[in-house]
Length: 224
Image 1 (cartoon, rainbow, N blue to C red):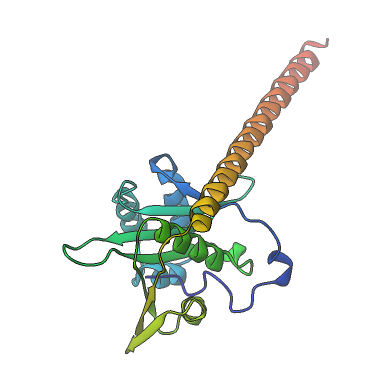
Image 2 (spheres, rainbow, N blue to C red; image 1 turned 45 degrees about the vertical axis):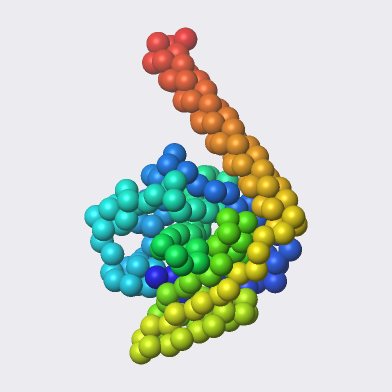
């Protein structure tokens, strides 16, 4: 179930021209994914999962993520906090076209930046390159933001009571989509490495400052 407030109806224009690194997430990011989902407010958990997921239920969901089968995408900030996460879950059935379901969540403090739309576009590009023919979104009918994203992409919407299904038929991959994904992923990985290095350096400086404070305190106590 998608988060209806993952992307605002009208994103803040100042973010529209900002390049946002979106990288694929693997098993090594599992704990940060768990932290991201656990940070969702109660109502947002309900909108994302279709029920008021507890911490234990979120933990089980994260533990069961299949990084070999599915694709998980994320947007990190400079503190290596996952602000937004998208799950592209593959649904393979014998003698049926390859389909995938899209779900997304964005922390409340990161709303208004169009992250939901950017993750959707990234997932669509990857799905096309992977041979997916149909992208599926299951959302609450009140999820106007997510459904607007789907409708703008040309998806067919079917409403049944309080829930709506969106179906988007994807065109085949092209050389442009394949090259674009390679470039975007490389950029995102480089951005992530730089953020890791910056965090490590800041940690190193903090350690030095702590040592210096300890030395000064010792000198003060000894009258040196």
